Length: 175
Image 1 (tube, rainbow, N blue to C red):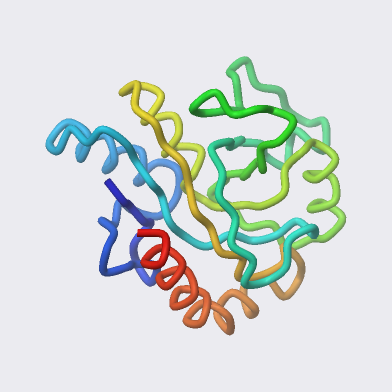
Image 2: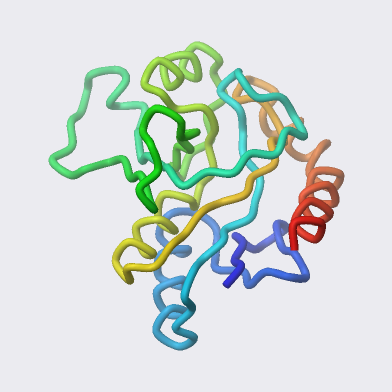
Protein backbone atom coordinates (compact mmCIF):
# COMPACT_ATOMS: atom_id res chain seq x y z
CA UNK A 1 0.00 0.00 0.00
CA UNK A 2 1.33 3.42 -0.96
CA UNK A 3 0.22 6.31 1.26
CA UNK A 4 0.84 10.05 1.42
CA UNK A 5 -0.05 12.87 3.80
CA UNK A 6 -2.86 14.63 1.98
CA UNK A 7 -4.02 18.25 1.75
CA UNK A 8 -1.77 19.69 -0.97
CA UNK A 9 0.54 16.65 -0.90
CA UNK A 10 -1.41 14.02 -2.80
CA UNK A 11 -0.38 11.68 -5.59
CA UNK A 12 -2.58 9.75 -8.03
CA UNK A 13 -0.95 6.47 -6.93
CA UNK A 14 -1.17 7.01 -3.14
CA UNK A 15 -3.91 7.08 -0.51
CA UNK A 16 -3.95 10.24 1.64
CA UNK A 17 -3.89 9.56 5.39
CA UNK A 18 -3.71 13.03 6.96
CA UNK A 19 -1.16 15.63 7.94
CA UNK A 20 0.89 15.39 11.13
CA UNK A 21 1.58 12.64 13.62
CA UNK A 22 -1.92 12.14 15.02
CA UNK A 23 -4.16 12.21 11.93
CA UNK A 24 -1.76 10.01 9.97
CA UNK A 25 -1.61 7.43 12.78
CA UNK A 26 -5.38 7.30 13.21
CA UNK A 27 -6.17 7.11 9.50
CA UNK A 28 -3.40 4.64 8.68
CA UNK A 29 -4.57 2.37 11.51
CA UNK A 30 -8.09 2.49 10.08
CA UNK A 31 -6.73 1.61 6.62
CA UNK A 32 -4.68 -1.24 8.05
CA UNK A 33 -7.76 -2.79 9.64
CA UNK A 34 -9.91 -2.34 6.52
CA UNK A 35 -7.38 -3.19 3.78
CA UNK A 36 -4.86 -5.44 5.57
CA UNK A 37 -1.90 -4.60 3.30
CA UNK A 38 1.30 -6.61 3.51
CA UNK A 39 3.55 -3.52 3.41
CA UNK A 40 3.45 0.27 3.49
CA UNK A 41 5.34 2.78 1.39
CA UNK A 42 4.97 6.40 2.48
CA UNK A 43 5.78 9.09 -0.11
CA UNK A 44 6.18 12.77 0.59
CA UNK A 45 8.29 15.85 1.02
CA UNK A 46 10.94 16.58 3.62
CA UNK A 47 12.92 19.50 4.90
CA UNK A 48 16.70 19.17 5.14
CA UNK A 49 18.73 19.91 8.25
CA UNK A 50 21.63 20.72 5.93
CA UNK A 51 23.23 17.67 4.31
CA UNK A 52 20.66 17.08 1.58
CA UNK A 53 19.64 19.72 -0.94
CA UNK A 54 16.29 20.53 -2.54
CA UNK A 55 15.10 17.90 -5.02
CA UNK A 56 17.30 15.12 -3.57
CA UNK A 57 15.31 11.89 -3.24
CA UNK A 58 15.95 9.74 -0.18
CA UNK A 59 14.59 6.38 0.93
CA UNK A 60 14.50 5.48 4.60
CA UNK A 61 13.13 3.04 7.16
CA UNK A 62 14.26 5.00 10.22
CA UNK A 63 12.48 7.78 12.05
CA UNK A 64 12.58 9.75 15.24
CA UNK A 65 10.22 11.96 17.16
CA UNK A 66 12.74 14.37 18.66
CA UNK A 67 11.31 17.68 19.84
CA UNK A 68 13.11 20.97 20.39
CA UNK A 69 12.64 20.68 24.14
CA UNK A 70 14.98 17.66 24.15
CA UNK A 71 17.70 19.74 22.49
CA UNK A 72 17.27 22.63 24.91
CA UNK A 73 17.33 20.23 27.86
CA UNK A 74 13.95 21.39 29.09
CA UNK A 75 12.21 18.02 28.78
CA UNK A 76 12.73 14.27 28.73
CA UNK A 77 10.69 11.33 27.50
CA UNK A 78 10.20 7.89 29.04
CA UNK A 79 9.29 6.38 25.65
CA UNK A 80 11.52 5.15 22.84
CA UNK A 81 11.49 8.05 20.39
CA UNK A 82 13.37 6.43 17.50
CA UNK A 83 12.50 3.49 15.31
CA UNK A 84 14.61 1.50 12.86
CA UNK A 85 12.10 -0.50 10.87
CA UNK A 86 12.79 -3.68 8.92
CA UNK A 87 16.06 -4.27 10.75
CA UNK A 88 17.84 -1.39 9.05
CA UNK A 89 21.28 -0.56 10.33
CA UNK A 90 21.59 2.36 12.72
CA UNK A 91 24.90 3.16 11.04
CA UNK A 92 23.63 3.35 7.45
CA UNK A 93 20.08 4.61 7.91
CA UNK A 94 19.02 8.11 7.04
CA UNK A 95 17.02 9.20 10.07
CA UNK A 96 13.87 11.23 9.39
CA UNK A 97 12.60 13.36 12.27
CA UNK A 98 8.86 13.83 12.74
CA UNK A 99 7.11 16.55 14.65
CA UNK A 100 3.95 18.57 14.23
CA UNK A 101 6.23 21.63 13.98
CA UNK A 102 8.54 22.72 11.17
CA UNK A 103 12.09 23.75 12.06
CA UNK A 104 12.96 27.28 10.88
CA UNK A 105 16.29 27.81 12.63
CA UNK A 106 19.54 26.48 11.14
CA UNK A 107 21.19 26.38 14.58
CA UNK A 108 18.43 24.04 15.76
CA UNK A 109 18.77 22.05 12.51
CA UNK A 110 22.49 21.64 13.24
CA UNK A 111 21.64 20.31 16.71
CA UNK A 112 19.26 17.77 15.16
CA UNK A 113 22.08 16.67 12.86
CA UNK A 114 24.37 16.14 15.85
CA UNK A 115 21.74 13.66 17.08
CA UNK A 116 21.92 11.77 13.76
CA UNK A 117 18.81 13.27 12.15
CA UNK A 118 19.03 14.47 8.55
CA UNK A 119 15.53 15.35 7.36
CA UNK A 120 12.13 16.16 8.78
CA UNK A 121 8.71 14.99 7.67
CA UNK A 122 5.65 15.46 9.85
CA UNK A 123 4.15 11.98 9.42
CA UNK A 124 6.89 9.37 9.03
CA UNK A 125 7.46 8.41 12.67
CA UNK A 126 3.77 7.54 13.06
CA UNK A 127 3.83 5.53 9.81
CA UNK A 128 6.65 3.34 11.09
CA UNK A 129 5.03 2.94 14.53
CA UNK A 130 1.74 1.79 12.98
CA UNK A 131 3.59 -0.62 10.67
CA UNK A 132 5.56 -1.96 13.63
CA UNK A 133 2.33 -2.50 15.54
CA UNK A 134 0.85 -4.46 12.63
CA UNK A 135 4.16 -6.29 12.08
CA UNK A 136 4.52 -5.39 8.41
CA UNK A 137 7.42 -3.84 6.46
CA UNK A 138 7.38 -0.10 5.83
CA UNK A 139 9.63 2.55 4.39
CA UNK A 140 9.43 6.06 3.02
CA UNK A 141 10.50 7.79 -0.16
CA UNK A 142 11.07 11.52 0.30
CA UNK A 143 11.96 14.47 -1.85
CA UNK A 144 13.63 17.44 -0.22
CA UNK A 145 11.71 20.67 -0.81
CA UNK A 146 13.60 23.06 1.44
CA UNK A 147 16.21 23.57 4.11
CA UNK A 148 15.03 23.95 7.70
CA UNK A 149 15.82 27.63 7.96
CA UNK A 150 14.06 30.99 8.09
CA UNK A 151 12.94 30.52 4.46
CA UNK A 152 11.56 27.02 5.01
CA UNK A 153 7.91 27.79 4.28
CA UNK A 154 8.57 30.07 1.30
CA UNK A 155 10.98 27.56 -0.26
CA UNK A 156 8.55 24.70 0.38
CA UNK A 157 5.80 26.61 -1.45
CA UNK A 158 8.16 27.60 -4.28
CA UNK A 159 9.56 24.06 -4.79
CA UNK A 160 6.55 21.88 -3.94
CA UNK A 161 4.95 21.53 -7.39
CA UNK A 162 8.24 20.58 -9.08
CA UNK A 163 9.17 18.29 -6.18
CA UNK A 164 5.87 16.41 -6.43
CA UNK A 165 6.37 15.93 -10.18
CA UNK A 166 9.94 14.65 -9.68
CA UNK A 167 8.88 12.30 -6.87
CA UNK A 168 5.97 10.99 -8.95
CA UNK A 169 8.31 10.23 -11.85
CA UNK A 170 10.80 8.53 -9.51
CA UNK A 171 8.06 6.30 -8.07
CA UNK A 172 6.69 5.45 -11.51
CA UNK A 173 10.18 4.61 -12.81
CA UNK A 174 10.77 2.45 -9.73
CA UNK A 175 7.42 0.71 -10.34
